[in-house]
Image (cartoon, rainbow, N blue to C red; front, side, top):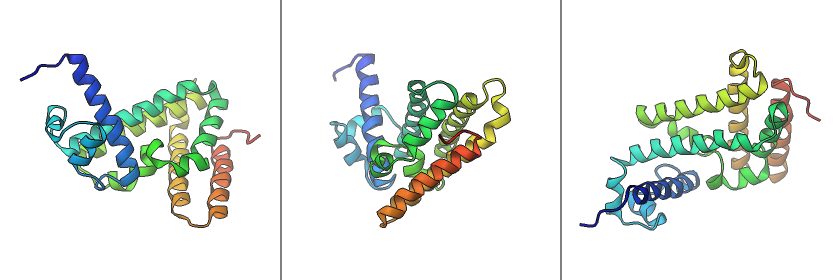
Length: 194
């Protein structure tokens, strides 16, 4: 039996999480079995259980990783309100809508997460809370709790809009929906749409 270094195991886990995240967002949580998920990562089925107890355990870990990556990506935005406007523009874009495998796990998986195990829903809730907090902190750094519910509502509007826009076959309507919601979210947050 070959023993791998701790770094190798961590890299392998990271590769599984990344490839499973893409696959889940593209095909849904039930769209692929362990064999497909491991094949996507370039691994055999047997390697799965060295990292995860079950597929539910993998789903929860993917949500934690994906949402943490989202929060970390906020550091790439401009400071303060300008960064929130950038976030809204990127989130409510045709590019994000048309590439779910590379986008927000909420927009791709929220309906399935709601029907998942309590552990998976708790993992999602923790990540969503971190997103709400990060948005609120940029909006009101002196008192982020004062605007946290508005931040959560704005994020919910953005998620729902991406989901609806993805479902529409009328491209003109789908694009207009993205633009209108961007304006509405900026208004909800008291930001200048200019």
